[in-house]
Length: 358
Image (cartoon, rainbow, N blue to C red):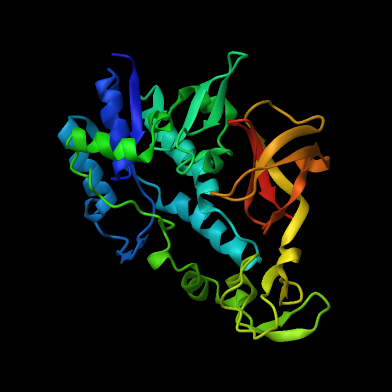
């Protein structure tokens, strides 16, 4: 045996294949599935519902039985609500646009779950992310983009701790999604044809606005939609219901297309303008996390990605006080959004990143 590895199993194709591959490679494998919420992806369960009724748990259990590994369930509903769901709602309530996976990965999946796996005897921890962990030229471990650039998930992993990289296995980082599907069918996995979910896992019907209306109604106060000079052009139902760069759903008839360029919670205004004003030459980010080194002490050149799925843009990162950074782009970037993350790359390696504040 090569060692004991815990696989975070969601009941989907990717994590199921990871467990299968690692077992085939000679590891002692067990699966562990998180129960995170009683709502999401179109379902609503009572808190007392048996975890086995969740499709994520039942499918992961079926795969574990099929390939002959032990399977555990970890109930993380309380910590997930405090660290991810409340964060998600609070950020939107403040007029920012959060990425819940960026919050979940370091605190829940590669935090609480990885710790639980260690308590169960795991030496390594594996997930179905499309990213790679490998040794750098200096003999340390680094995080890299996945081979499949359309599926690359390195952006969502930039906040995990640098010191745990050596314990992480990401077998799908070297594969494309098509190869994953094909392998799952070749192994005859019971979930091989299961549809891929695109939504935020805890948001019912992928409708975050309904969640805000239900759990944070006080943040939704009607107000004015204004242009850059302050002229009133229309009305909104609540600033958090809009995002930077948004064009549709403004309800304004105007001579040219208008886009959201600023969310002003203080004035309770949604500011709109033409497409040119959606672009920004620089940004400030805080709560930085570094994976290629321990601290940024002088300006460096990087490729910077300002949201999941966006293309990187070349620029210069400069350290500021209080751990903040300034990223100045060679070419202005569209819809730089407070609350989202800017993730920095040196080629395919993740250097680090931070949360955009302005």
